[in-house]
Image (cartoon, rainbow, N blue to C red; front, side, top):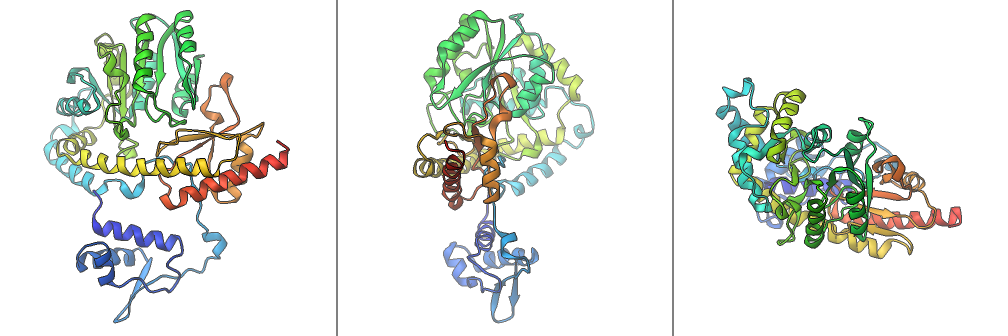
Length: 449
């Protein structure tokens, strides 16, 4: 949880970055800041002390605090608007809370920490996860939950395992995230792609694939899909599960950001078939601390033995210390409070982003995932290529990502960019989108589209 003094530090840093506080300019008085943030004078002094240690401000006895100067030319200090970075907002990461949990975990698991653990995770954490998942309408006993080193590990292992339906082809949304494509292509597999766009997914085409091909499983990100930012409706999820049941296809539902869904009645696909047809995976990377590399998978009984063997072969077990800290973080209620803050934050970012798209994108450009504070895509008009827009925007201090690499080779599209606003200051989102819209117009004229 962020404290008042951390909020003050963030605000002053933001003013320095935006040059609202220029070199040598006096900072607001201690009393004024205390009144603005409804906190004590000691809290403001603590924040200013941290900023001073970081050499961002300096104090003059009896005069106050001032912004530190810089000798760098102004052009070099011009801030970039980074729509590429897609981790959690660094200012919202619960470093201190998690540090307390790590310290407690060392005390609690000091004996187990240096011993081998169960491949599928600490029993106590699996029980805690079973309770926690109920808030997401995922009801699973602890013995069907596997703790993994990020959900990507679970996905990578499942790709290679034989499934009870004895089929061998993988159906995957297009586009999808790089790591899953790498897992598939590194094994020489040729999966079947299903397009996801602003209109969702073509269920008739999906049924045709399920009916005519030997589909082992369909891999889907059901909420805030990467890169499109799209989410399925409950009705679409139910229909996809019914098709899987009808044609003996498994579903791997990657719900890596389900915690951020503000729709109270939105259910995962798992809720429509908890028997094992839907394999549910979840990560804590995008909502907690990416470096922890912690995730989970809810597996059918028929895959428990083979998955356990594969997990043991991959890394023996996930580190005990990080597991223990997560257990404490969940059981203490810290995670729930943290998620509530993130939901509000990313919902606000999504609202700002969608408004900016509608105001600044030119006719002919289409966007997906405007409600997501994490991912969205912009489809460029005409024959305009994403790589040209990426290069143009980079010269104007706006970073976006060419989404071409998020397609399987045979489904590749070169006219879509991916954006994430997860680490972009709210005040800069519209500024950045306007530059994107202007860039599209400029290049359309240049290339005659």
